View 1 (cartoon, rainbow, N blue to C red):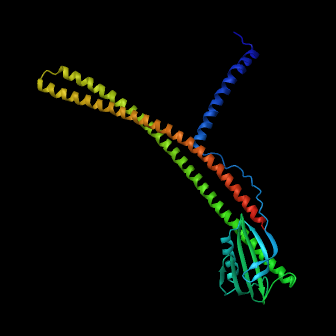
View 2 (cartoon, rainbow, N blue to C red):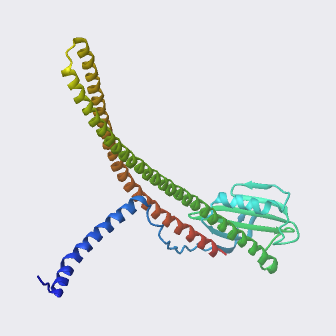
View 3 (cartoon, one colour):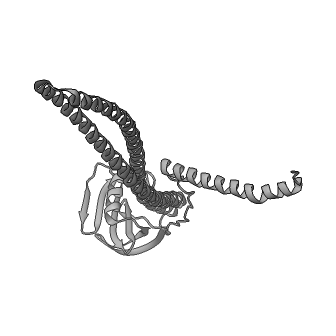
Length: 328
């Protein structure tokens, strides 16, 4: 019989190539499933840095009541910084400049005879009133130099230095507040990364447990094959022993041979029981594998959720770092 070559090629293309492609696709899906089961999830997504703008630091010249009556001062509104933050930063900023004690009365703190070189080379009496705002604090500072409060009209240069000192204090306090926020969010990020590493280790442990259970199945199957061979040998021994028993006429000898036969049958029963035990081990190991695969799937899902949180947390940290750089 002669074949038409083009027809044969057409038949091959229509039948075998789709069948090959289908089998390849099936193999690919199976391989992908295995990889997903063995490997952890994809990398953390690329972060999008939010644009976090700092609130403005507002500086105003005021004349207002303080412990020494109505006097000129500089009012500073610092966003986000609490009254406690201001008190802490104020004492730390000025403490090394004076041996005088901070005297607090109500919302006003006074420091007598302190040298603040940024303002003046002569000792100053420095007064600060601190009040909370809805989001931040208001500070009103007064500087008394040789019995007179510093004003722009009396000494423009010294007043400018006083104003610059107060503003620098506000900038430093605001920057420190945002720096503290960054540390807090970095701690939260570190905790999330710790959670992810813990999940990955759990994932690896579950894969190890699956391999152990797969090995247990293989070992049990090998033991079953060995056991079957032992049973076959034992069956041959039983058949031979039955022949010996049937051919024995002496009562005592027959009794002994029967005892041997019973022992052989007990040994065979023991092999049967071992096979039941091996089969139970296989069933248990397969159930363990199925449960572990379900747990791995949940573990991978949880990893994805934690990675999403890590991405969001990294974005927040980067956004706060950008905000810190803008506070000047």
